[in-house]
Length: 145
Image (cartoon, rainbow, N blue to C red; front, side, top):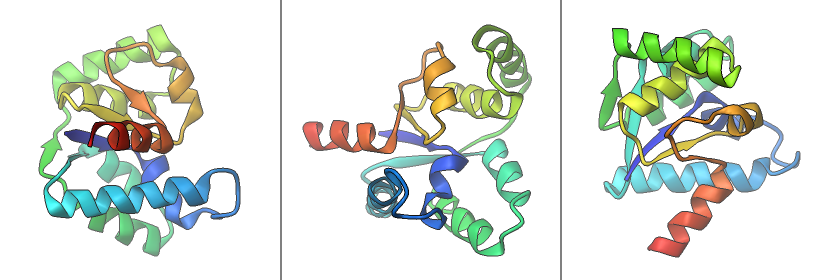
């Protein structure tokens, strides 16, 4: 099972665990990290994850995200097809270009799940990806394993 974890999810362990669903969703991230180490799931890294992470001013967050992405079995480079698809996503779904690059990269990598805590992306994306929250992913995983 191929998973694309966007930066909102990857940075969750640094957010207040008592706010909203952060604690439960953060636990899902650590489960996914364990599954990736075991080879049960395949993480997909991307140029966009790297760019967004490099811009993070907090060294501990950058280091954590880098360590998770070092587990990625697949890396999606930015291609001309992805750039074209980004333009379509921005126009059709009215999403921000950075979000659209994540989505187009995940589409190109043909992931099974795009996991995000960004509810704008969840509400507005109408493409082919199966976009889920961490808790939706966990529920699917538990029901199928």
